[in-house]
Length: 98
Image (tube, rainbow, N blue to C red; front, side):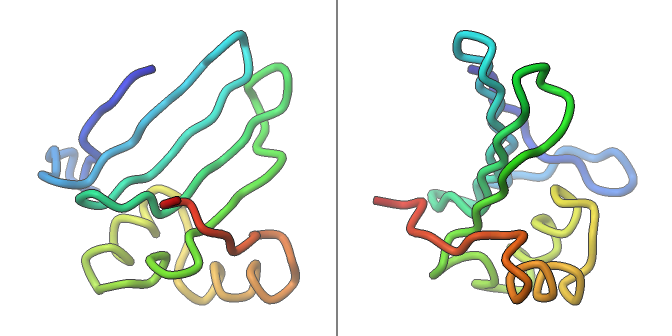
């Protein structure tokens, strides 16, 4: 498991915003954590190349402007894109902070 601060568009490390990568037994998962809350979980295919499922925390995915800003960087999209993917079922809302 590897934890890194997320980087701004200018390449600066951002405090309290983390990307966590887990390659347990070749099953790659990536997480975005803001402060103490898990916001996004991405699960990759068996090659670790393509995202096959994306989960957003139902309570915190859009908690604040700061969370949203770095979530957008992590997902490489806008809030409009994220909302559309929730609506069409591409992204699954769940409790990532059990």
